[in-house]
Length: 206
Image (cartoon, rainbow, N blue to C red; front, side, top):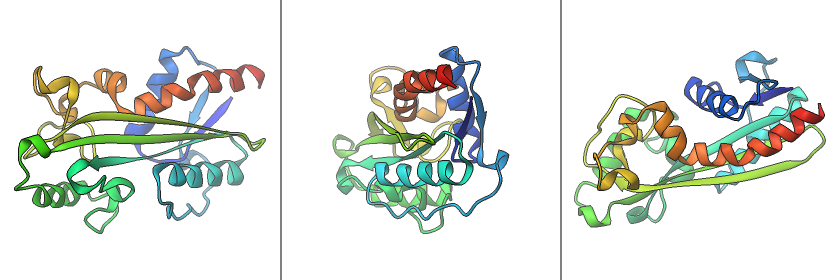
């Protein structure tokens, strides 16, 4: 069975591949957008993570005829009423500029005391099948915002986020966790694992 991840993000691709491997889904061939015939990627103009994930998953399966997984994710900061939220990737204006996004968020939160720096990573993953079926899973990873970046792993806001599991432990940011540790805890890992059973069913029937 071929499975398209509607992304060219190498780290997201590796994350999903690890989860498939852990589930023993050796029959699933994971593809990225660069592996299929190019199509115009849709505008992510949804109001929620689920909206945007559906937009991307539907575009992938429509243009390729291949079962497609798409995710939309970001960081929701309690003090900012859940923002950046769906705007996380372009919070500073330019899409995908992690450094600028991090710097802007830190500046906005500069004078907020530690007890009001609660945040959560949120991911919604959608599996869209060629027969029109769709399956949606959400993952949420609670924690707090740091006052400066820590760690070299991960991407996006990882260097600014200390998971709840680490607050009373070693105090590592999500950018200091190993890939395996992050898979076990992260919002995207939670959402993707929620789709594994359905992927297994589709693979068995194909």
